[in-house]
Image (cartoon, rainbow, N blue to C red; front, top):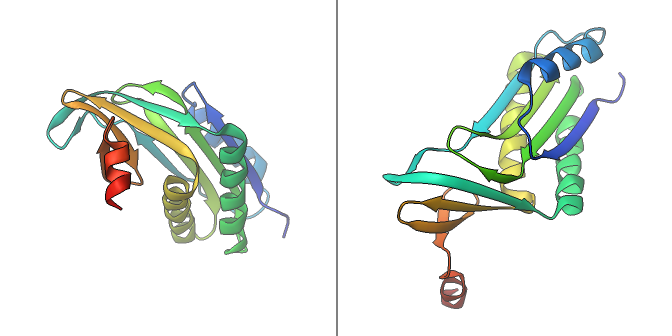
Amino acid sequence: MSKPIIRVGLSKEPVSLDDVAARLARETNGLGAGSLVVFMGFVKGVVDGYKVNTLSYEAYEDVALKKMEEIAREEAAKWEKTYAIWIIHRIGVLKPGDPTIYVFVVAEPRHKAFELASRILDRVKHEVPIYKLEAREDGEYWILGDHTRVRRGEELQEAEKR
């Protein structure tokens, strides 16, 4: 079995799902896989009942890319029939409906590809130094992990409580 194709990136522009899917199908079609699982996250328009205006992503780019590649390699090593993993995270100021992250997994059987994509997404959200500032109609909030929000300006108060 050959090593899986691993690619990671940070992008200010959206990605063409058709282009990446076609490229991955071409690059892996002779290896035995017949399916590609794609996860695409996007900016929510409403959170906690408040309209979201923008979601800004900032990253320590070198560290973020290194960590994303580490995650992809570690997850690929957990299943021998993993043929490709691509992770692309958006950075910059995004609006509701804009794509935020893409996880592409080619593996067989397909249920393993779904499992890999889910684990990769969870790890990226919790381990990669990408910071999110949500601007909504009731203020600005730093997003920690999946669900914790800290109002901008109250960060020190929260830290002092711990």
